[in-house]
Amino acid sequence: MHSATHLRSALFVDFDNIFIGFERQQAEAAELFSKNPDRWVRWLEQQVPTNYGGIEQENLTRRILARLCYINPRSFHEYRPHFIRSGFEVVDCPPLTSQGKTSADIHMVIDMLDALAHPTRFDEFIVFSGDADFTPVLLRLRKHDRRTVILAVGPTSPAYKASSDYLLDESLFLENGLGIGGTTDERKIKGEISKSTEEILTEIAHRLEELVEMTGRVEAVQLPGVYKKFSAFTKSDNWLGFNSLRNMTEAVVTTSRRLTLFDEDPWWVGIRKKEHDDSFKREISGLPTTEEIGLVVKEAIADSSSPVVLASVAQKIRKRFGDKILSSDWLGAGSFKGLIERLDLDDLRVSPVIPGFVFDPSRHEPPESTMAEGARQMLKTPAIARTVSSITDLPYITSSHYATVLREIANEVNENGYHLTQTSKAVRDRCAGKGIPVARSHIEFILKGIVFAGHRFGEEPEVPLILGEVLFRNALDLCGRGQLNLNQGEMEETKRWILGELERGV
Image (cartoon, rainbow, N blue to C red; front, side):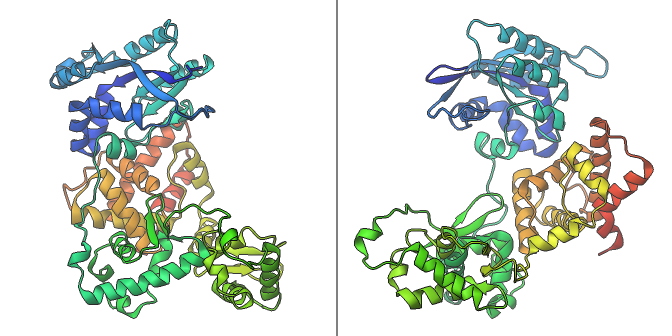
């Protein structure tokens, strides 16, 4: 399918579609996309993965051999030179109707089919467009064993996404391809932190180290419960003056040599990565075997009528075998939870619920968590919600989570304005601060849905209920595009799912 050294790619850019999509959400993104194609083309070639779609070959580089941009010269002529300068073949597609419809899509399809027969044999077709009309040509390319990558700005047909092999993440394109990122908050640096605040942060960091030692990681949504155990924190109404959960956690991490923040979705706190091997066995004599440790764990659980905290089990092991077990970094596992997961414990289970537990499911009730509560709430969700979510990609979250997300979107935009990348991160962290585990990708989908339904953030003070009503209209539109015809009762249930708690003022 490809050469031994590189992936031969052809890039097709529906300029009008991408520009207008970005302009609706973030004017800065539209300008950077249009005036500096070199930057995001380099990102495509050098940073976007090539080992997808069943291809596992390492060190396979991407070469974009054909670059074509389809543009309406009447509306966007000022951007034409930037693409010419970046080595694009620019195809002018002027309006053909009084409504401004151009022939860009048919030009792109013809050129893609021509490229399919090109002597170079392009391995990969990269399509920048959210127009679901390209679905048939993507399916045709798949039949010819060619890989496809798409970038779609805004809500996209699930069928269109399913027709491609790789969907470029819009947030990564904005942050890494265009260089838009950062945050609306000014981070406090360590030199600006008072001595008393630094002492509190250090105390919290020590507690986090203990928890990570036991559980392996602490998720963002679990952190508020940890922080609220400290009296100094509970007296604060603004995350110790750092304005957000994320800012405060970054400050906590800077006071520890062992902790680090892993910037994933959701983000979490853990021990700095290091290589674990068996070299400790040569340096520390008399270490117990995993079988001996397993027996101690089983004894601890057998004597208990309820789940046992990991720290308690760890203490029993240290008492039995001495602190050399700590010097070995828990036999090279990196954390006590990591070691526990390596043991043969028969039917015993480990729970990540803070502060971490070991339990016997035949005798003990599993420890509760916010995740478990969320699962119970999903049972109350209308049955039509799962169908709507599967057809439209609308986030399948609880009604209470929708209420929280919409409230925090309103709060964030009213306080800091709207920028897709910054707003989605900030709202995710605001939700985590309330113990609500909502992925950033879900928040972005909601933000885009509101924008593409015609709402303009920042023109008036944002009201959560109004945002929810706009999102509901967008959901109905997506259902129509996905050929999901809802009856009146199903529409009312869908509305209750998205707006129920806001309408009741819960």
